[in-house]
Amino acid sequence: MIEVKDLHKHFGEVKAVDGVSFVARDGEITGLLGPNGAGKTTTLRMLYTLMQPNHGQVLVDGIDVARDAEAVRRRLGVLPDARGLYKRLTARENIDYFARLQGMEESLIRTRREQLIKALDMEDIADRRTEGFSQGQRVKTAIARALIHDPKNVILDEPTNGLDVMATRSMRQFMHRLRDEGRCVLFSSHIMQEVAALCDRIVVIAHGRVVADDTPDALRTQTGEANLEDAFVKIIGSEEGLAA
Image (cartoon, rainbow, N blue to C red; front, side, top):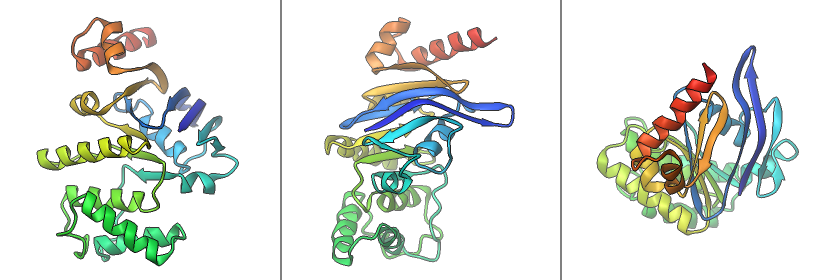
């Protein structure tokens, strides 16, 4: 479980995150949604210890990020906005490298790696260098690398960005599998169809603040809209009006 409490981050005079609080629970997919510049990626970077907040608290399975960042990293699997593969290594070598950084034993690395390669349908690319990979192949490799240590909590930043229809469908199925295994899955997306298809709960951020936090059905009911995209537009429109 990931708990975010009154998180703040500013860059000079710019308040990128201004008091964000929410909970992402085990066995659920929580969507982090908002317009460009809303503070989603900055929030995620603080969650996975890449940035330090100016104020607030992040707990991962009850562990305070500020007090024990290393223990938190062991409990997180992260697909960042920048995939960052080592191009001269094969997909399998990329996965192995990150497993060793986690201190895993070689026998466990082999077992876990092959499970992920099969689950993500990567058999045909596992021994190819990642230089020249398609976007879908890069994402699959990055996700396998992020999950090699079997983390309970998974953070995915725009996991289907640039994927074709079949790769997107495959990614959705894999995310449902992670949820059904009881993991906490937190992901951000600009694609409303993704959010509607995947999320058990949606956290909407605008101007660095949480402006809605509920199930998709509840958000549709609250806004009086049958379509989730229309509900999102109404929520953001109301916030824009209040900010004006």
